[in-house]
Amino acid sequence: MLKKLGLLIVAAVAFGTVQPVEAGESRVLKRIQERGVVNMGHRESSVPFAYIDKDGKPIGYSMDICNMYVDKIRDTLKMPDLKVKLVPVTSQTRIALMANGTIDMECGSTTNNLTRQKQVSYLAVTFITGTKIASKKGSGIMEIEDLNGKTIGLSQGTTNEKAIKRVAEEKGIKIKIIPVKDHPQGWLALETGRADAYASDDVLLYGLISKSKNPAQFQVTGRFLSYDPYGIMVPQDDSIYQRLGNELLADMMRTGEMQKLYDKWFNPGPTGINMPISSTLKTAFEIQALPH
Amino acid sequence: MEFSYNWDWSVLFCTVQDVKIGCVAPYFYWIVEGFGWTIAVASAAWVIAFSWGSIIGILRTLEDPIWLRIPVVKSPVNFNTSAIEADNGVVLINIAWFLHGFATIYVTIFRNIPLLVQMFLWYFVLPEVLSKEAGMWLKRELPLPEYWTSVVCLGLYTASRVGEAVRAGINSITQGQHYAAMAVGLTRVQVYRYVLLPVAYRIIVPPLTSDFLGIFKNSSLALTIGVLELTAMTRQIDEYSYQTFESFTAATVLYILVTAIVMFVMRIVEGRVSIPGMISLGAK
Image (cartoon, rainbow over all chains, first blue to last red; front, side):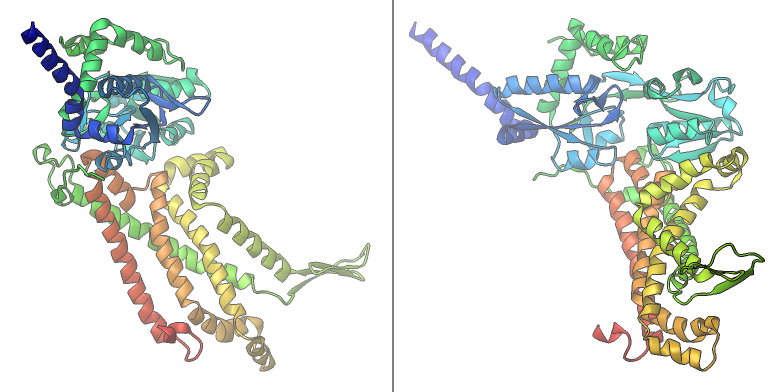
């Protein structure tokens, strides 16, 4: 009897100390605990991943995932009053803010690739897209080959720019490139006829079309010219913190909650983006639904 | 605050495309190319800024009227304003008043609209308000449209600042010199050419140096309309490699280098042309 009680005490002590130990070994969880605040970095114009709604609050697919991640952190640290501080980031500031410890996660539409993993880590892949070409209907542009001798707008420094330049070089296609600052300017270049086409991740192109003045005028065509898996960006070298997020995502993918979340934002979604889940992403969800 | 970042300065010097060493593109050449565009935009814009700015500055100092006489057979009324006079069948138009007014409006507009907005207006709005052919020419036929747009925009903007410096320089010369020059029979053009401008330009070397430095720094705004100058290339390297701090350090060093050279050269110029007792170089 005494022995049993002793075991119970040991178990209780062990159980009680599990959480603090976990936070103690994780750099990020420790600092969240000390601050009492999770700093959530988010993009402001990645429709429908993280964008500003009418009330001026960031919402979207990635934002929902991040909020669930915060709930998970709350449970783990046993801090029900853990606050969230929203930090708007851009593609220029996100890496610096993550490196200097300002933000604990980045919620947007960031491609996970091996070069970037030298600086940051990612949670499981939550969306898969790739480079496609948007043009005006009737322009006769279907594939990248049709752009020979024509002009295309490309956002500076994006994976899309890299992809178009690589394919054009491989195939010996002569395309005149207009570098643009961001998506709105790229779209403006296409609308005003400065460029014949604009290339970006297909989901973002559908988003741009759905928001344009005359959506019926534009088309997204061609095969995928690159492979862009999106993930929530987290600080590197903190496997405990990262595992927490991946556990959440695996659970959601296993229970089908992830699919529901996808449908909420993409099928048809509040912005009318109307993109049913692709078979690739469906498979990715199945593969990443790791068991406990 | 903790700082978890993997420094890798070698990324700045990578010249061959090799994914294995993290060199997705030859970043070194990008920096060189970007630096070249920065110099090209800034120097071409400075040519516009200096020449056009000088004209604007001079026009802003025109105080005495220049009357253009238009004989009219039948004058309906007689009136007398500072801009137009009508007197017994002769209409007199004061060109100086209109030129002065034009220069004032020019400076007010170009100096008070943010440069970023001006870039946008020149690049995206101007082709749409022109005729369809002219607009299409700007958008499609003009070689390097983003380069020339940024040069014109930056040049016209800086011209408003140079104009103000020139005006201040001319106004700082005592009226006595002006009158003395008139008294010895110089025409108005000669007064400017031989008396006012040679002194004015020497006085305004320090503010002109600031504007010249400013044009290098402001040239970074050309990236918003797609000129791949130094800052744009830096951002691109950052996006490709995620080595943010290395790439921006390189840009910072290059900007400081070029502005330091400009300052050094202008110091020498200032020393060479200074008028004893009139310029502040002695205060160094």
